[in-house]
Amino acid sequence: MTAISERVSEPTEQQAATRVSQSVFDGSRLRVILLVDVHDGAQQQFLEAYEQMGKQVAAVPGHVSDQLCQSIENPSQWLITSEWESAPPFLAWVNSEEHVRMVQPMHDCIRDTRSLRFHIVRETGITAGKAGSERRLQDSARVGDGVIRHALTFTVKPGSEQKVAGILADYEPPEADVDGTTRLCRTSLFMRGNRVVRAIEVRGDLLVALRHVARQPQIRKTEEALNPYLEQDRDLNDPESARVFFTRAALPAVHHVTVGQESTEGERHALYYPARPGMGMKLAELLSHHDERAGQDPDSPVLRSTVFEREDIVVRLVDVRGGLEADPAAALGLTDPAQVSELTTLLDEGAAPKDGDLARLLTLTRMDLITDRRSAPDA
Image (cartoon, rainbow, N blue to C red; front, side, top):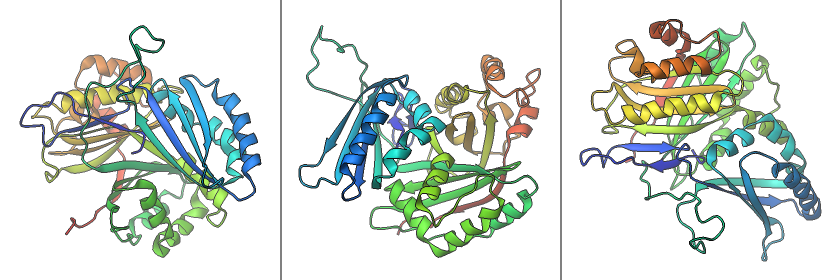
């Protein structure tokens, strides 16, 4: 979950060692770092592509500034840094079709990239009265649990759902240990209609883990078996086709909260909240605010909750005690009646609750679990 900052919101003494709260919605400025390895001889082409893209990025809402740097030791290595007013506008842009089109000329020059995203906690050189001195900084350092959460989502051709579910349920999982520092912890697969969501949890380096998984023969076999049923065509033998597909499939985590001991088990579920056009980020923020409050309630049935968002797709992954039906309001993240009213304005009309009927909303949003696999604990 590279786009997520980690925050502990005034935990009690009993919660301090176990409660984790991570969110992009704290208002802090964002620093994005992109490490780029350019093909030999393509440096000038890359520079020209960056200059053209830079003119377009400057007009994106929330963008503050950026820099392009070239290594003094290896001219093929470049560094792009950018500053944003906060994480949400950056995520809205980087996960958009506009971004996919905008970066295409640059990717023709690139051998490899790595993106890192950080909230700005402290900075020097800012004095009272100086321009920008009122920019918000975080009050304290954050504590996480060392787990990166990410998801992928894509749609399959209507009528193929049962066949796709069988393929996804029967795949042979990859080795959990990637290297000395990276490990796959859990993979959960869900479907709702013809939409597939694959949520993964990783300790260590997410990019290394994803590349490790993609190289495994059994995973490649499963992905090839899916190809005829995908609504978006892809050719995994074509690096550009694969890159575009997985870029569009990325469903970043924007909020996570864990309450209680990590070993505490609950039922894992996924809820799909289809947002009205342009309302995805606001919907995700609404759900995150509830989860923050619920995370401080020791009686809440929700043990862990992760909100994923991309454009108008919002998915909430929850581990709950006693099942979803025991407390639909808590399971949905809607214990406050005012939130139910606000949600109605954000959800797609077909999914919006009528007369506060949360049981019906739970039925409409609930995804079918295809498989949920946890790796054995570290030795």
